[in-house]
Length: 329
Image 1 (cartoon, one colour):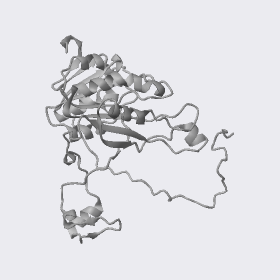
Image 2: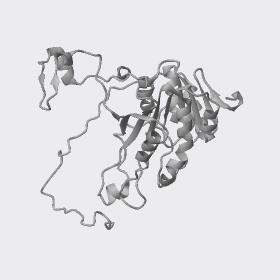
Image 3: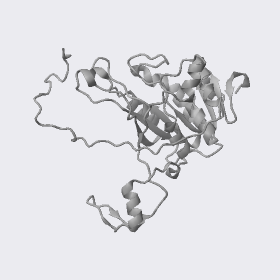
Image 4: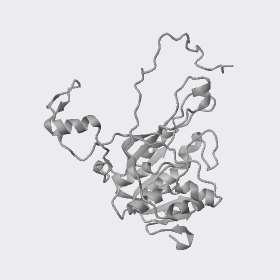
């Protein structure tokens, strides 16, 4: 890569103000350990950060897919956070993000290592038309996160992302457990009561996206910079960077935005490359590296209420026979 094209450089990484395809074309094959990114979603409504119509998404993504597969190490991983979309003018879902993962596997030779789901507990009830006006759908609060790899055996360890044990598990470890079969037929042996340092996380990741006054936002405000409107929380890329890379590995975010991925890599001592087309977003991203900060973690658990908690059969409401097609007055 040409040093003159580097927009900003830190101890471990580099930002580029250019198309990621240009950067990747200059990289050797099998040189990236992890690609973790949140590309522009295939939305019906245009956003200021730029996005492709859901119907054109696969063709737009193909050049990136080809380069992703080439530059990725044989035991490396590709992680894509991608939100769903709705069909224009009706309460049905687009299949574009499912078609994307099928294309990546069937046309470009990737393997789907595992599908993850990022649940944002703080998400507002959207899309409002179908959720709060016609009330024929529930709020859309989950993004799919595809973890793909070049081989069925990418390097990974869930020991890197263990979670605190629940109170019931702590009690079990303290007081012991009687080995027995569960109603499902699974045989839980005495090994179940061994303390492994934490619980293995599920593929549902609960992270509220509520940062409205963090150091990045304050930096943008103090310097008159418009912050990136669609940042993912740092805990999301951090989960995969911890699980799928070692110190010194090289991580690429081809749709860098405000360079959240780069900030996480800097803390975790991974080398990194972020690419972005909009200079305003990189101006703000510099604020992530302008001061010395430390990661702070809150051991916060998010409960999901059982579905029947508020069910009331005495309601006088009847279901709209047209499925919400007619808008209520």
